[in-house]
Length: 396
Image: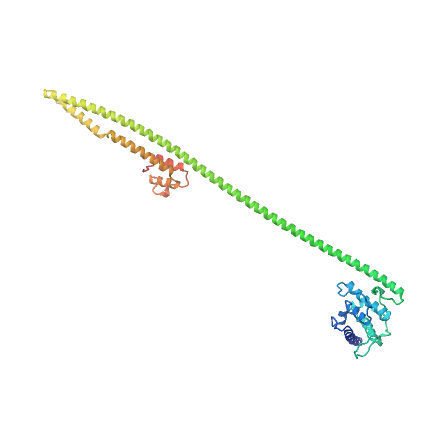
């Protein structure tokens, strides 16, 4: 039975809602912003427009585009004040502004419908719908609205209810103070949010700066390492060049020593040639003396002397002739010395101008190893030069 009663009440409320919607759209001359009556009344704009149509100018100012809940509540309070002071709706019949927003109890919406149907009875439209005002004239339970929810519109007459209006004004002031406190709290929260965003932006900027600094330091470190590597390579090249210069200087010194030795040998050869020439001259003189002795011996022989002297003189002459013919001539020996000096100078130049690989090849050609692979690599130039000076047979 209880459920059936609830279903009947719900059906009745739906029927009354349709009647109110039809009447309000007829008065407003336009459809409601939402087909659901409760949703259309939440911001109070439709209620304020309806009151101004029923009694022009009864609500001079209201929030036409309310965004905050406080503004929506104020619009509904403006409508209730107009109903009480200008539209002759009994105060006991009025609903509270929160009844529109509270959908937890259907009785709240019935209070709103009661006021709208009373207004429809006072300001009927052209609709032929059956009036349903009578059953609200003496309700079984009268819900006294809170005076704090009723906010008077400035400049609207009060109808002589000074005490109630004073209380309503005080409630409006309290509501305004509460709204201002809420707005201050919202502003504080917004300031905190802005501070949080600023802190996050500062942290992000700090991270960006730190990343840029780290990248710059890494770049500087890389450049420093590159410079150090280039410096090491330069020093290594200088060391190699200095070692090569040292080797070349040592080779030049050894070549100069070899040239000096060659010059000394050439001088010794010249001295030997001079000695040979002296010996040749002495041999020639001896030959002349032998010829004279031979002639004398011949004369002795012809005069009856011993034949053994003549035989001995022939043997001496033969030995002297053989010794003379076994020696070179002075011109040939001088030519030999000139050729030897030219060969020494040519070999010295060839050694000084040869590269490391060419020195290895010269060592092999001069008798080092049976193949070029047996000649060691990576040795200093002094190694190859010393070997060539001691053992080499370099062709000019």
